[in-house]
Length: 230
Image (cartoon, rainbow, N blue to C red; front, side, top):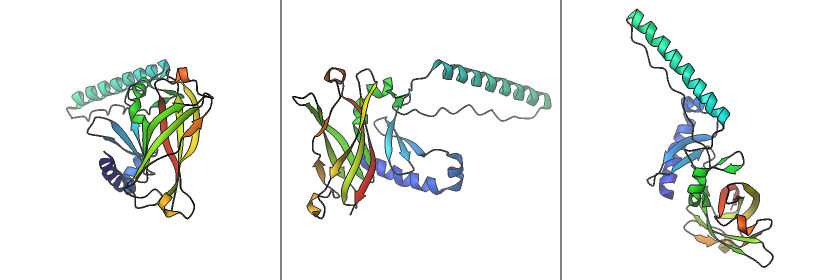
């Protein structure tokens, strides 16, 4: 799957430099790609990627607004068709509103769809490096210990990979966010660098303030936010 994502990223870079495409995109999303397993991945302009879920939680206000917009669109289309019939000229169909996929978190809470596919959120990648959740444990002080697996397909030799961890209760509510150096090499010790083709395990990161009873589903989000290489 990672090779497929790498190919998609190259294609996304080509699209990014096209002026017509750049004019149409106001955010950092380059493309939405559907993988062979049916999952949808969003490619970002900074070469990161993340899973996307197509069933976001919607408020009643948003639903009413969509209904109003649909009604207005239908009215415009009806008027256009009527005018065309009178003039005996063809008329182009009115384009329907485009619905953009939502991310896994809406309003600070994990969506129901994201919770159903929680295993997809336990991995993240950037710059040819991938970080995956490995295991958890609890110590005698009630702290949560997290371990991760790192792999690299990059020509860069990574010495620091900083990652943001979002921990969510079984209900989907955000418990807390932690930032860790998921990989920290030793200065001027090349054998400790994360190199191409390698797979390494992280140290155990101990996190306080997580209720074990509320975290039985192990809901989390991972995001690489900074990387350093030599």
